[in-house]
Image (cartoon, rainbow, N blue to C red; front, side, top):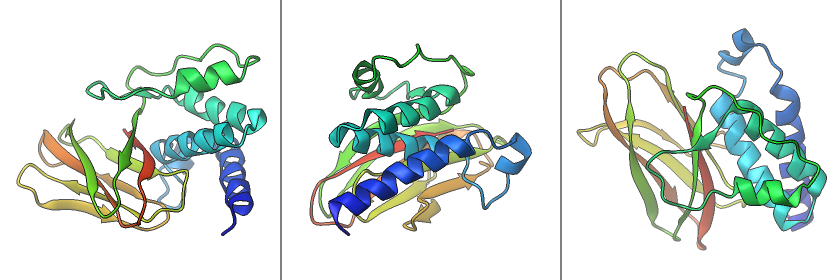
Length: 192
């Protein structure tokens, strides 16, 4: 796939996400429609691509999805949040809308070729859990979630790259992003 067609696909995906953000909550629970975390993960990747290609309109649309969601960096993440820098590139961007304090949390990271990047996150018993993964590149990434006993809860390598489940127990889960490609892969991960 050429870089220009990849750019078009990512930007088109960002536009579709912005339109999808208005889908009623009842329809969002449908397994065929992307969950909020998935839309935010795609918006983060779209924003990175828009910044790389100096496309302020696509960047503004991706930022709108991120800001309307109430997404914020995950509490334990020590990486650099790209969203403030993206906002600075879109001067007419309104100040962020504040969503629910329990909105999705995000982080970015890099996975070396043939290796994985992982971290832990607590999920509460009986509450829906959702993790979505996106990348601004076409690198083959796998998302895997392991419980406290290191048993797989979810493994996905499909285009959607999302895991949804309801934890039986409140515990720490390991979230692992594995890079099956031959170059370093940047990624965005959103946790609900």
